[in-house]
Image 1 (cartoon, rainbow, N blue to C red):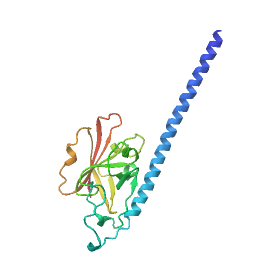
Image 2: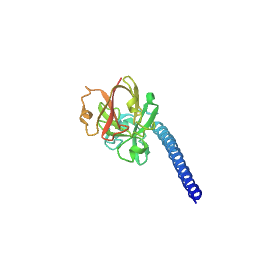
Image 3: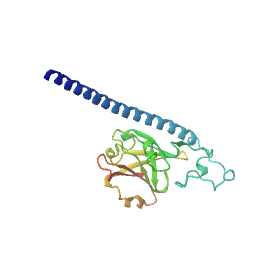
Image 4: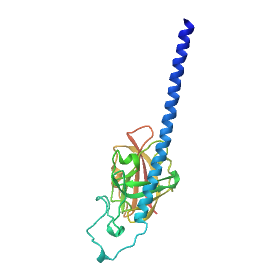
Length: 221
């Protein structure tokens, strides 16, 4: 009787262990696949965006309706910046730019609006004058803690470069000059004086605390 109960217990424990192992394998397998899928999709979107903006030919003023603007009011890029009028969308959101940060090995589209959905697939424009416009533009990204998006934002150091391309096809180089942690409710520095220069603020949640944010300041060089 005792041996029978003991064997049954061992069988149950073995089954539980197998289920746990399969669960762990499934979790990490999905995480790897999801990261690959997002990065592959982002690359395709960036390629499409750059095809639409990469061969910019400035038209004559008489050929352009200066009242027509691209985007949804988030930036000041006029039709002069994209004479074809072609826009790129991703996940139902307009792509307003791309960002590349070699120091943490990322390159992603920047979407026109911050939502729960948009932050699951790319970076997103939060506030400010617009992509590569004079002043401070705030861009948010999710911290998946696995290298996606802004997961490694805290690893950036002063002097690291950030490359941002806008809807006109113009790429501006920014240089990191500050990296710090702030409360999620603290947005006082979003509207800081940039002395007529282009700056960006990058923001993401910390690894262990959703009430805090990792903030990076960078200015045009």
